[in-house]
Length: 102
Image (cartoon, rainbow, N blue to C red; front, side, top):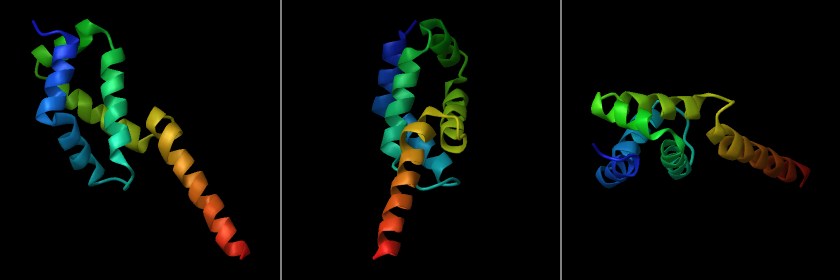
């Protein structure tokens, strides 16, 4: 049985996560998706070994990854939203205020 690290390495090498992000993001907002990809890898590596192995063995990992990506893109409570989208929105708001003041 493959280890969690081997499974995540395989996902990186074959571009599965990037492909899934591009497919999901096509229907969503346009943000820097490299950050999301890195967050997904980190999240996978933080999960229990047995859970990742079971998802992989039962061919459910793609669905699980798609849900993770979708939740991160859509939810205002997701780590991705909190770290990147919220910050980006606040930065744009501040920049727009500076332009309006001129």
